[in-house]
Image 1 (cartoon, rainbow, N blue to C red):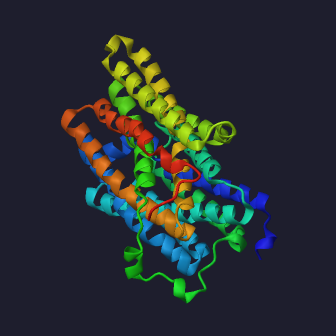
Image 2 (cartoon, rainbow, N blue to C red):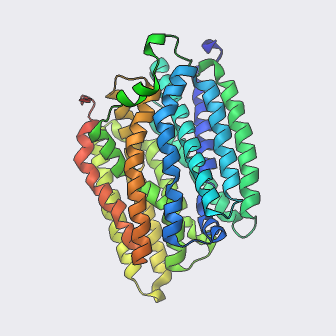
Image 3 (cartoon, helix red, strand yellow):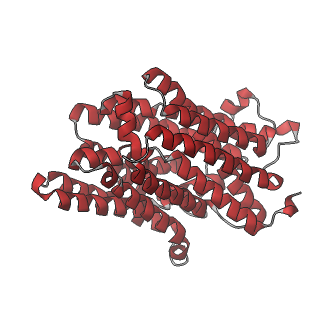
Length: 401
């Protein structure tokens, strides 16, 4: 029974799951230069290949919420975790671009499936306890991401990529499944009302798009995606620093995201969330963009000054984008009348499609111009455009879909 698990323990277990989730899926990001070299690809081809994970994510977002609604969260979560870590483990072994593409699609599906499962449970916890964990769980995810970035940076040159990822996947899969089993009594149960079941046709005909929230979300989160995909390669290629040092800006970025996500509730005591997001977007866009421009035009003799500006730019980007994404995510659920698991998936589909196109634009901008710095101006402009969508975050705003 659900009573076997009190809210405080459930909260700790959910936070731990998000931490391990972030730790797992971001573990190989600081080692992308090794993955790219292992595949023998140039920047444009590698970026395009990595973006294919969005295909799997698309189908995951479209279907997993409905599957949870139909069969319950326990089985879906366990299977999703297994798929996630088995595909990641295999990705670092292959040298064939085609096999990598297939596995990356499965990896993208696995990430999305676990994302939908965990966030649906977060909304389920909110409904039962009236305690909002959406921002704090994002903070724990970022904490896992930061920790794994530090560990991965340390392991570069010391432990092989394959050994690192294989051991990590095995340990995290076992740990996360054990926690899910512990949470089984409070997980979302399968729908017992046959009239509210979703058919394949209804998955598509019942699709709803909340454009103000979806566009705002896409604008605000792509800077995080861009720095996750290219931040380490950008630092290493531009400044020719060691593998360990090239991960430092991304580590700082993630650390500042954690700070922002865990402390935003204090700021909300004096300011509405829409105003906070507007100010944060301006800070991240203007601060990151201007500092990167300055750092990249500095002469090679001032390499370490450029490196310092990179770190400051990434720090500002992390702080400014920290709580904006979770704010739009929570607004999407508040403005919809559909089940939370379905909302998580449908909301993600729109953003996944938008981000897929943007990732290709960025990757081939880098390939044709040879400048990652120029390509980083795309997420910078998007971050600034977030200010046009902050009204959808107001507590009294309602969706028209």
